[in-house]
Image 1: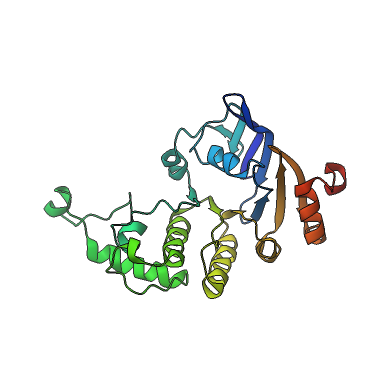
Image 2: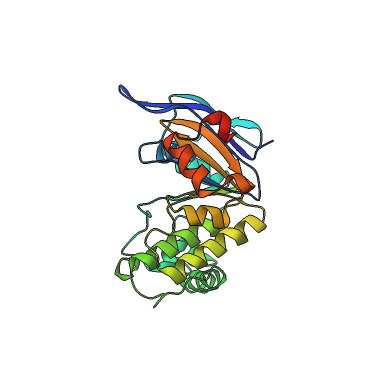
Length: 252
């Protein structure tokens, strides 16, 4: 039984069919790369799977039970986290505050009851988690908006990984990173998988797919057209499945 599964998802925006019966599945402790050319429906499918969009039809199952995520907050409560391409960070807050955004630690006693935050404890835990995930920041005391694009991306990735208990979706997580930071993110992905959490990697970087993915699912024109594993995950097959040069029967 897959940990998370989508069955024949459709999504229409007026007369535009973004998804035309797309399916997807992932098991616990597995890295699955979701790939496809621009306009294949990857981002739309992910948004449906994490509650950012509502599918027009189809089913989503978590641990074999049909679920409906009316918002990303609902999905997060069920252990699903996402790193979107736009990062969704608060630029005026520091990295620790961003890590605990929506999960702030309050001070003990009366001060906590009055809504006072324990910023020292959040900063301490944030520093520990950033170290664990290999995130190197110039300072924890500056607004995240003043950091480089790569550092902001690293914070967003660390936040998703820190709170996911079942699945973490990463939409182009290394797009703004340098070589060293990119390798660190790939190592984090492997570490998360080894801890039993499923990772969905949405990327155009085929070497990264081959480096970390246990399996690849390919979307084209709003449908899943191929599922590739092992030796079948050659660059030729990946590109062929995305472009239609490799048929579904050949790719299965």
